Length: 348
Image 1 (cartoon, one colour):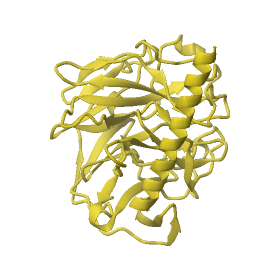
Image 2 (cartoon, rainbow, N blue to C red; image 1 turned 45 degrees about the vertical axis):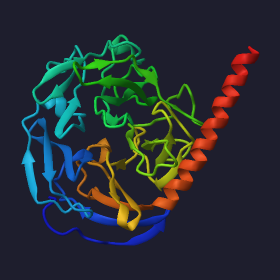
Image 3 (cartoon, rainbow, N blue to C red; image 1 turned 60 degrees about the horizontal axis):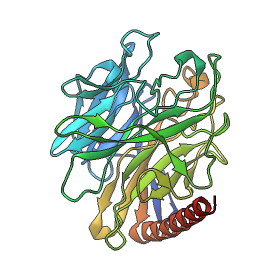
């Protein structure tokens, strides 16, 4: 559990900062898809045959938390929920859409539970034939607030896109991310989905190219007056890793940089996931990123193995200077990409 002192096993230096183990989970802990919102940790956990949302409050920078509470969100919402703030209110968005399964009837906002959209939303990409073009949304959602001054109505939504035609159960691959813009006021309105673009990553990923989900947040390091987005991605190719990338608009990201290597399960998943959320320590000029290793339920072959490693939470300290240099290089790469794209369009 989270209450209590974290165990520090090692420290090393990478990516402008140190990496430390802050939490080792119990052997039977099933918590995964962890989000971090204003010093609260939220994740899903198995409870019998259902999934529930669990919230840990008043967490410090070592993720030592004082309160644990099981939330009453519907199990379909709990499966892949993104946690985000609207004003001072914590809101969740989650759910799957699969007509073959009872209770998987769309994506909902909670609390209170209200339908947001379904798998036939415009632009949504689902190539697995058994879903007939209707997105299941079987990966974790992520929500990032758009930099609109003090206006908290506009957000970016990141969702699973399945781009490989895997018709056989147990056949995996082609997991990617799609993004849409939404507003919460006066009503929930969602733009059409667009496929996420990452420079130097395949525009049309194949079965060996997998991004399990995106964890996207506003970049705490601002250069001049331009705000950007910082994305963390569990990727399988060209090498399995938790990767980091920067975007100006939240739709097109600069090339990914390996933040931490990972390993693959037999069905093409990285065994590690980023926590969706950051902690900023301005006095120390640090941005804290967290990674969950050996995520429960990811390696299906090891789920019942007594020798399966315990899941851990790692803290990676990223120096402001490191993120500033990463952001500066990303903006230069994106400017070059946009210039070349405009030149090609003019010549065609």
